Image (cartoon, rainbow, N blue to C red):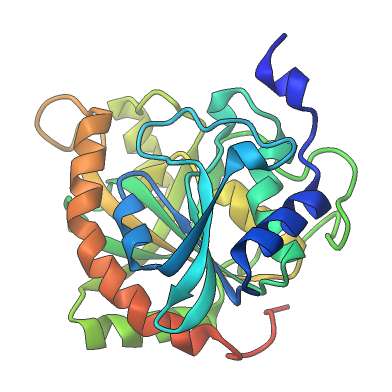
Length: 284
């Protein structure tokens, strides 16, 4: 029997209860750590690890660099739910699993979701080590994270004209200046993976308006917006997209560059997160 069949669907309420009881804090911000960015977890003070294996319906993560747990603690004094590892459709899981961590965070009362990810740079100035603030996305993963019955507290047809919160983006740019971190805005192109893109696909993504390409984030954004949460996302460029760099692309390169850029992003987040508490209501 496959692990997915054995576990059944994630039980969001029960998962949230376990995280709350074991973590002992009510988080204000949900921070998702992408590939190679697990080092940011070291910035969570007094972290209590709640592994996904403890949560009913959560399978194991299968991607190197994704620990597969929630960390409940504080960053710059603010209670946070940090997530080391995420689920992707390419792992063979369904929409309910991909969406589950976001829904657990919402069940804990979190109103603001901050996502990080590792990407290939398409725009010429986005070289490995660059950090991009996502201001829009193009969904080419061709999977629907809201498929199935409407989850509690979510809209069937959420508006996605402005998925990334403009006020929070301005705050991020101010925090980047204070932290001495170069930050630019751009559009994230989501593809299904797990294979890296062909050179022709990268040319098509560039023509469509994508500045970077990655295999995550967009499903989480859609689920968060369906539930009325505020969202922001940071992309760390770990490699040049296919046809734009020298040689082949591999996951080890992604991990190495992600770890290197994580230090600057960590400083930025430590300056940003205190301002996210009570910064306003979710955007319409």
